[in-house]
Image (tube, rainbow, N blue to C red; front, side, top):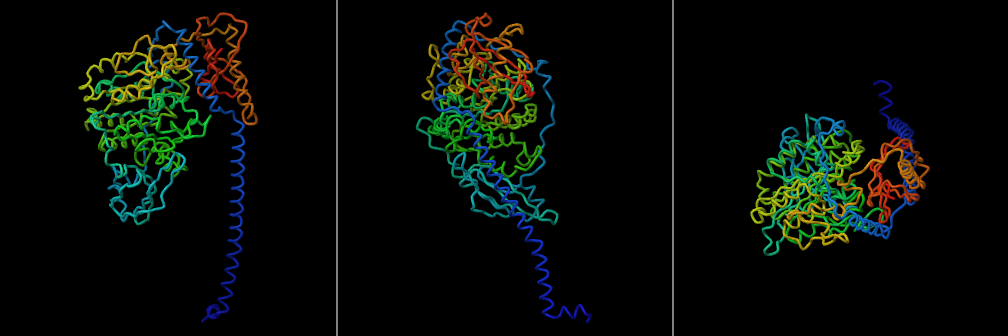
Length: 640
């Protein structure tokens, strides 16, 4: 036995060695622990400071009160009444735009298809969720833990703590929720591997169809499938196969005069689902109220009482239709609703980058996921009313929508093969044209923005019962129409006309919303249809020459007003200075737009974000200017 081994045999030696090691351990670990705690405290203090600073800044921002919103709504009504009086006797001429105009094609880009490289281990079909066969084959000994995602309202949803473990090809049945969070593990090439994700289906609790009132069993289903930023011309350019299939195979009626009634998605979708404007709900708007949107105002609620199973599928909740300018829903707006699914998905992948994170759910693009969940929904029993809306990928870059063309044709083909078109009113639409690209700075881009896609396919069952509606719909193909009309048309199709909105502009002969199953007068005007001057595609804007004094005064007024708005945040918002004027256009309600006048009261309105009293305005200028920030101010309007 050598000396070292001899000493190691004594207990005292071992005790001394352990003590020295423990002291060394403490000398290393304790400082690291203190450093970690100190860093955490500093981070927490910085975060609290940031939140408090942000809240203070928010308080300084100008907000509209509920009463101001009501005043704005009344001002718009008065303005429309005045417009109707002055426009009486004129005719709305829908502009005929070349989808392949050189002015537009210079912005057209051919981008690569969206390819999803990841694989979701678990998928659901109706109420049954299980590991897919390819994973079972390549990753043996799979075990998955399922936890329901519980939705209470748009501000409160959570992942349940109750866990259910399923091994191998075992099936998890959705009971309390349509959506589930899944954690799986297995052995891949002798190494334990993991997967975490979310899956969506249809909870078993709603597999039985709702009770249908007596005599109401035979009304048709409704499917509204919408793409973000899709104009009619954009559909022809970027989704040519889908356009041809709808137009020539399904014999869809594609409305050339379908006109938006306001800015952004909500200004199209809200009238389509309620028959009303966003100004009718001031208490639910972020800028003027704090209440959540009352779901009883939606068409989903009305048709549910008639025995319909309802679904509202939308794929970008952070900029959602009822979350961006509104405070979200107070409860689930339809029987099936994807909001909590996408919120949990985004939370899981907030650090991911690339196409997979932005555009994919597992191995399929987000737009295809919306198509597949819609396809599954129509396999359920009972009458069905579904609104499916995909903002991905076209919201941020419209050129990417070409990726959805082939998938959408497949969806339509399958929808027809399954026999749904015999009993389903199908509407394929866009909410507006491109909003954020340079194309909107062109004259045609502005018009395309105001003329989104609206294609209607009538079900065979409805045509057999009411054959006259086909010719009426076709006669309205090139007439001025709006989302208010689509709301009225849907209710007409399902024989629920008692829910029509009877509102009409004062002085108008017709209600604001008209059914497309009756001929709409070609003399219909934007003011009569509830469309403000800024959004009316019928208006012929005339150029203002640079020699006219108003050319420079209107541009200067616009920049001055923007500086007025940003004054409370001057520490962060640079003061704008007018650099150049691209153009100034004019439209005069009194037909005397360019007559000289000695007094002006210029009021600037960047529509849908800043609201002014337009009830006394007679002349509108549209202009594009460049300020010292280098960013053009597109689609600004000045009223005098």
